[in-house]
Length: 162
Image (cartoon, rainbow, N blue to C red; front, side, top):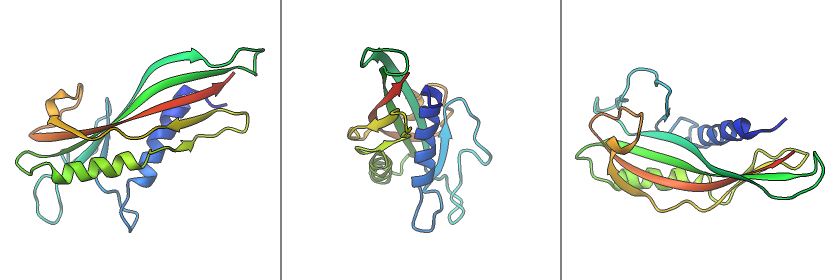
């Protein structure tokens, strides 16, 4: 049965399945808040030996409200939230590559509908907000090292039938 935890897992699964290049290789390492990534971390570009960019994914819920009223099994509740995708690049690299990766990450979720259940539950995402840059130290719980951050955020809604 679909639920909020399943919706969050579906968001992460969509990111993993579409954050790939033409050969189905991940564009960068994806890191999740409160989960230690596999070594080496921070990642190293195998071609240059230099630090490589990586993406941090946060899925935040902001509220939940009744959407319709009725008998049990015929009501909808809507959960609102934000998908925060932080692209981190080495300091002194500039922001062009990070901006482009953030735009690409946001496009994965632009106006999408997924996690669709035959009984009517589903996720709908909106348009990604323009990427914004800053210090990687601003991401709570992420040990980002010597990196610069560019973040895009995507509003999302989970419609839950209960």
